[in-house]
Image (cartoon, rainbow, N blue to C red; front, side, top):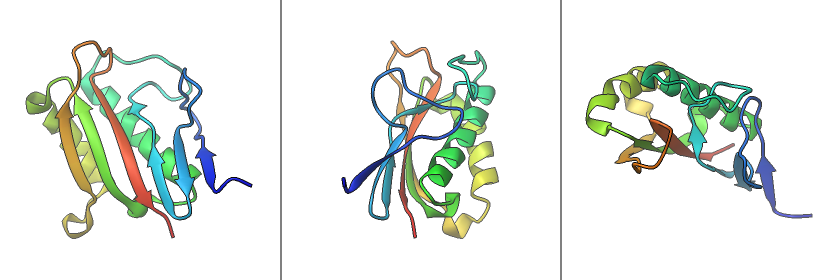
Length: 128
């Protein structure tokens, strides 16, 4: 039996043959998560909606791996315009992680010009 286990979560899937996340032992790492509407591949035009969707997918991902958002150690975000998009990102961030003394690490980078998404992320969690 493989040590590594693929993690799929409700409302999200990739077009390529890759899982939503992968777990070995207590370490879970996601593939890229976008802000598509749950259950579809439709990408909303508005940044706040994409950000809300991405945080819903983050929660679903870590829960499907057997954890909670409290197990998340780091999230990397890529945004089309990090300078102007941080407000939407920070609002959802503070909702998911209200305790300023116990938030995961975060890094925000510029998203490539060719992407249709306004924001994407990947997540690392240590579960259990």
